[in-house]
Image (cartoon, rainbow, N blue to C red; front, side):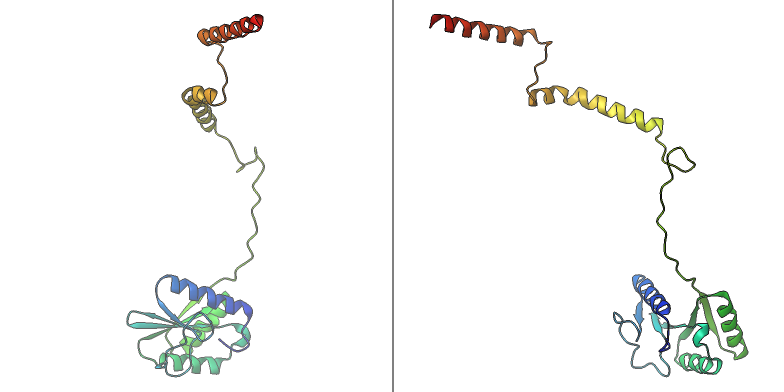
Length: 194
């Protein structure tokens, strides 16, 4: 990566680094602090990132129009490809740069892979549409009926236990009411005796 590379290209390089590392491949770069440097047996110009997969190596270079110099770029690519079992993968940001890179490689008989990675745009938060509008939140009648059924069954199963827990007396139990009347009468009789 050139010394005057943009912050955007540095972010792209980090994105690619973590993407390849997540796949389990060995990734080297002199431009990323979390990465080991390009191996010492590498000859010539170091790529922005080197990916080691099995017995082959993929040298990744990020090229941009602002720092593009045909003569220096061709020398850099040839220097990278002098290393055995190495494929050169060029990453660009837009279609014009991609075409210019491919034409330059064809004119100089250099075998490369060229990939275009679009610039990331800041993601906008989606605000959910209001209910009733197309795509809005809609409560289905099946969901409502299921919820009502669950509540009803829960009350049937756990209602008596909840009543006992909160000491709510059920008026449909006459024997308990009778016990209360008997206890009240006993209390009155005790008071009369005194």
